[in-house]
Image (cartoon, rainbow, N blue to C red):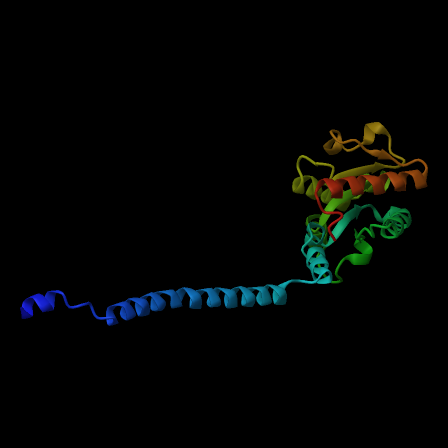
Length: 213
């Protein structure tokens, strides 16, 4: 009889309570996880707000990281000393344009005490394009020819970076090294200056160096 009573004895209510406790315990991590997620997302939002750059900062970064500023000069003017006055006018014109072209002028920008060869090579390597003012003085000056060869070595296929400008030179005297390049013939100075400016601008845009700084 006692065995039968044992079999028919109702299950203790503690089982239900333990089950409920287990259920509540298993649900609590999800609620704490949810609160943690909410906390994390709010902290991430705060972090995102704290590191977001202002438009001014971004513009400064874009300017400093622009391809244009990867080189010291936009254009290197290769000329003979006999043509310095004309070149100074050209440089003044280019630097006064809205683009504020940075020009390398040897007698003005070369480092005192440095070797001529070093300065000529550095000027070519640190410029996006090169204007060759080809005059009778240019053809007689070995340093002008040296700089021309350095420019051609820097950009063998030219790609618009070498800009020959002829003045007072016959077509037959045009340097054979440049025969595969079109040139600007300087007749009216103002028109020629404008042509040089437009050619430099096309070169810089083709290289992706303008409009980013």
